[in-house]
Length: 100
Figure 1 (spheres, helix red, strand yellow):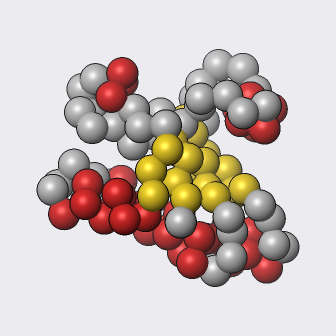
Figure 2 (tube, rainbow, N blue to C red):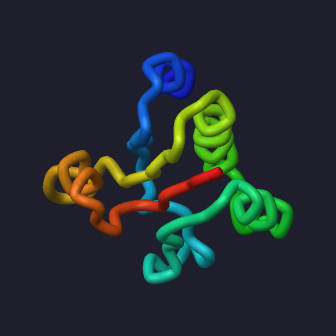
């Protein structure tokens, strides 16, 4: 639903607040968080099983937003300290930015 609203409003960046720090290459190692991924790279990670389980619907929501007109989607952990939205808008390295 959020993807549809974001696309309808023609937002440039949608922030998806979730319970993970972003897309990790190794779920046990937060230092493997990817800062920016294209949808093609997301597809490869999904095919390899790196993106799996509960991450699949999160990533698919990002895909829907991008495919309906949102320029980019940032996936961030809602449990992070500080203001997630203001940090993301300042261009920080919070979460994973997914682009077309």
